[in-house]
Image 1 (tube, rainbow, N blue to C red):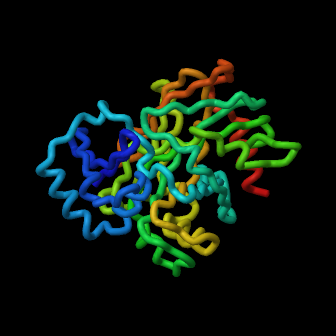
Image 2: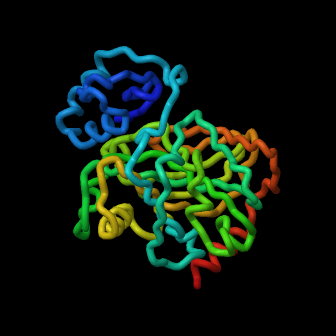
Amino acid sequence: MKLACFNNTRLGLVDNDDQIIDVTDLAEPLAGHNLQQIVEKVLGHWSGIRPKFEAALKLRKGVPVHTVSLMAPVPDPSKILCYGLNFSEYGMVPPLDKEIFIKPASSLIGSGGTVVLPGVDASLFYHEAELGIVIGKPAHKLAKGTGMDVIFGYTNYIDVTAQAALSNRVIMPNGRRSLFTGKSWDTFSPMGPYLVTADEVGDPLSLQVRFWLNGILRQDFPMNDIVFTIADLVEHVSHITSLKIGDVITTGTNHTGLCALQHDDQVVQEIDKLRKLKVTVSDSLRRTWPREPFKELLENIYKMAKR
């Protein structure tokens, strides 16, 4: 099943004909509940709500998805936990320790939104195509082998990054490395278009991730290039921070094919079974960079990984 948030306050289901059906009322939201709270209620009471949603898909009429304004399918999670350097890069990078950073919910935009490049002193901005994992049950210090049990579903996620110099992955305030400064700007987390339930996705490691920039395929890699399994990622982070319903965990990316983002770019990401996430890019400064994937960044990632 595919869940979508739209028009600021509404929760919908998307059918196979790309019609979106409003089911906000079926979540029985209390007065004053915002959309994030409605989503969390649905995820937390899924076994009771799912039959109502299945009936709505059969009985209710929808409207074409392109006529509504899509939001991130989890619009305001308590946290977005991002793994880095988590792919083998086709055998180029040895297994590493798990590295995690947090991005704020204010960085989220939905499909159809615009990535706004800030007017900071960056040498370029670039994309990282990733799988987003959405938590459906509270979790703390999960036992080995139980990580998959708390996953509600999956979505496309793009980790937009500002880079200060080719020798560094992210902007460096006062000469220090800062993932937060490089990755946490508003609009730097496109996500969507939908939240697809885990049962519909099946094995996430069987998925293929593709990313197009202005119609040119830039990233195209299998999720089974990942170093740690999806269960490992969820279990590991649950020992660091308690997971809440609606929290998002991102898997990292295979960096092959990365290239710069700039003004007026048209971006499309598609992971098997998750549909297409589409955003545009805006830069008031109209900066430009070489379009070809930048080998120096990849070489530095490999060097960093091998240290």
